[in-house]
Length: 397
Image (cartoon, rainbow, N blue to C red):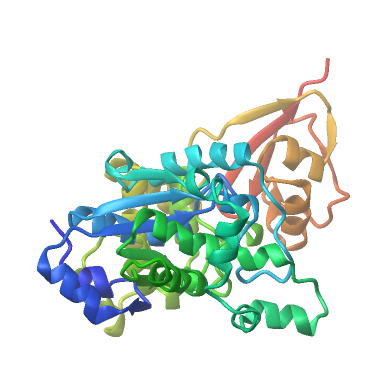
């Protein structure tokens, strides 16, 4: 079913600029050119990334043209938004490799075959110095320095590089190149999105409208979802891990997660809100949330299986079936090395952090120190957090 105008403008949105203008265009039946710009600095997406992708899908389902723009030029500079230091540059080949993986993951909910996939190096790479000088006349240095991140750097006596001022100009020029009617982005992109309006006007185009979506708070309930904080739910994670991580979402975020990460209608979410107010157990609602998320990225069958395993492990205090076994050449290994080589953690640093937080168990016992040596003469059961299990044994010859 096509999303209605209210859903497009109100569900999971923070600000619509200029709402009245955009609403009139939507009512007129005009097919809009809707832009989403992405600098593919990383390859693995999480549910926080997918909030704006879901909004883009709504406009696609409503019949509008989707321009999915990959910043294989802007990504080489890096968006300075919310950063107290300049970003490390990426190569064009790195960005394009990441973009291919990004498309594959976004394709779980977006029809990428019907999207217009574009690369901003195609036009930004052709601009002359005279073109850039003209572009720079759209903004003053004072306007750039007024941004919070630069004010923070000034207070800390940290460097501000000239090339960072060019980023919003390039993103704005992308909208000129595509003659965009509407651009989507997170609230951290507001300045850059508005830059598109200013630059389009300077280049004789009708300024695009802007729609921002919120930044999804991670499973820690405090910070923006991100891999570095290990508070994320990954798009390509297994149904079991996706379900289990969703169950760790704080109770006060349940409704927001239903709105931003599932396909339930606003009417269905209103019923969930009513149930919460009448004393429904938050655990039951999180189980429904977890089912919806897993079904969206995997299948209903996978969601049912993940739920059954979760109930068996945590409600009935059992262990998952078919725990994999990994053999090692050594009969004794340091716990950090063991966790790293078994791929149960992303890095040795993550292993140490988990140990310090009491998140690692061997045969049901918490590991107290990252200096601990594990005897692998007999099979041991490793547990990372609440969801990851692996049987390990030494196999020295």
